[in-house]
Length: 516
Image (cartoon, rainbow, N blue to C red):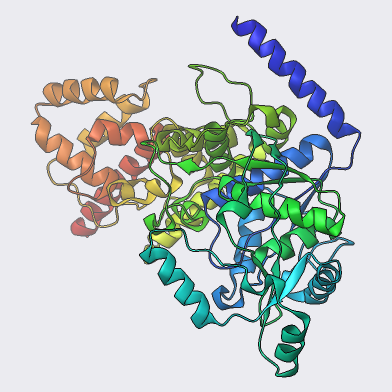
């Protein structure tokens, strides 16, 4: 049964791919510059991008800034930076190529004015002179009677003489769109047939405000048409508004794009993600040290779009691999639960993948060098040799999920060489003898090392705690931290021998100076 289901799904995806190959797919990501990009926004951008790349189409970025009161300076630039960091290439958009610009809505107001004139002329829209005070009274009355607030369409059928009188007096007005009662069902690419009779629950919506800026509904439809958008993939919260958009397309006499609405991203317990949580911004993920590929795989692991592999171990896919396998019919129609543990797993997999490639390994080493210098700016005796960093990374790839964790205080011995340590409980000759045994040890695992150290202490007639204290100081200059054997394993054989040799040489020099 399972094999039959997979075969059927594969045929559906192949049919979908065949359709896409014979049309010029154009999709867009259209955020508002009101803050930083978050997980939900990145998911929308990613699925549009994967859909476009799978079909050999174009991915557009459009900035929807018609609500001028909520703009955040620099938000557009940071948003573009986050998209590029994630590996999402922009084919057309602000600062990029494209024949359908400008790609910022506040620079397209003339287009919206012309579109509104067209709706006024064909009777699909009208001027509304209702004041904010009247609208507020309508809202209060609806709430008092336990009804959903809605505009009562008072100005829809104003007599011509009243309309002319209001215009002659210069009364401020907005433009509203006439909702009709006979809306066709939305054929959602993800949810199937969806019916929302908005005229039964809402009043006529404003499509142009009194400041001559369009609302989302008008600008969205005009821009998608003018930019040749063929498929709209956006959050399910916009599904109820899509009926209005289809009515607008009908009023303009335009062919609408196909719509697909992505389900909500939710926490593992089913609760809704919230910007107030402070940890869903892409900026926060970047600052904490997550890699782009890890974050993208984390997102698609929750939202579907790929063949389901039950009980399979997490596997890391590049963007080209994700695009090749992406199938819209496989996108979940239920809320997408994020598993935070998977993000750490994917980041660990990315560290391993970069270590395996010579070029990316060098970039990884340079990144660690930068992190260490930032963490210990006053230290001049940092151990940042490439071979040492690579050895540490191989150890960390099995245990740590973030490179930043390598600069924590308890691991400072990895990078900061002991400078003021003096041998007290151990002579240089005794340490030289131990060094030779450590040099002859092929396995640098903490269990074997711990056995060797205990055997040496017993044979040399040394107290084991005193030996451990001396070695800890020689290797790290610290009084506490991981066990000495574990510390040796983490540092690796070459660094351990080097630091012990430096301690021996330092004591030898001190003895020679005392003799002089």
